[in-house]
Image (cartoon, rainbow, N blue to C red):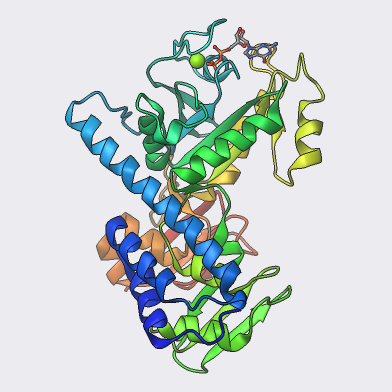
Length: 384
Ligand SMILES: Nc1nc2c(ncn2[C@@H]2O[C@H](COP(=O)(O)OP(=O)(O)O)[C@@H](O)[C@H]2O)c(=O)[nH]1
Ligand SMILES: [Mg+2]
């Protein structure tokens, strides 16, 4: 492992990680690679960085193309409505349009010939007391990320969405999942929540502390150097599973965008073994449905809700009834975050809150600003 990178490589690495735009990222990554001494111990690192460089270059091309096409108008854009916008991604014939029809009132064409759907079509799907906006789209195809037609627009729509629903044909779920996730990856989108693997929490002192549940494939001093290189002197680095220096750099490099994702395997009426085929290959959560035979559809709403990592909060005034419509917040949000969203006055003068729901032990329990709310909590904020 590159334990002894020369200072100019460290400096280039730092500029690379801190770069705010793609051309700079590419420039500094090239510089970084060229300053890493060529010996055997560095090969894995260089290999990883070269692949990353190729990806960044492709992304830049994509951006240029997008700009060129958007000036001519005609880019896909669907105004967001409801609690979240979920873009349905799938290959042609997987049943995207059939799924939208089954779950919403939207009118969309279901075809027996490929590429029936030419433009995105939104529809609202009710889940308990909220609604999700599902968007039916033209098919993903191999090479979509650099495609000249709708491919790039489709993937940029996925970037803008709150979540993705990957729809796989039960006849061929493994191959389709591979194609779709690799197109997403090439377009800079990841559906794996990386924060779960490595978390870097800056602290005020104590140096660099590492907590790793697996095996470190590089020396602790190496992690130390990488972090110091980007100006982080004190931090707790939590790592789930095995990790090496490449993973640390990747964790610091935020150019890949995470999107919550629900994977759905369609046509279980005809291919009941689809989910089993899929699960034999991927350790990845997926549900089986049939859009046309209406099998398994009741699970879709709650699974979308779970994958988004959101909670519903109902605010309440003293002596009043809870609001009918919930506020949608990120899981992990605290009472003070609710106050901030509702009104700056409540936030500035926050004293305590009373909470009804599963996050407290008894109804109307008094809690402080840092109390973490749970889904369906009712919150009454008291001010000074
Ligand atoms: N057997 C079966 N066929 C389905 C199902 N869902 C869709 N289809 C059929 O698959 C074909 C393609 O569906 P469509 O919704 O147009 O696919 P899209 O290209 O992904 O929008 C149509 O002939 C549908 O009737 C399903 O759950 N079971
Ligand atoms: Mg369609």
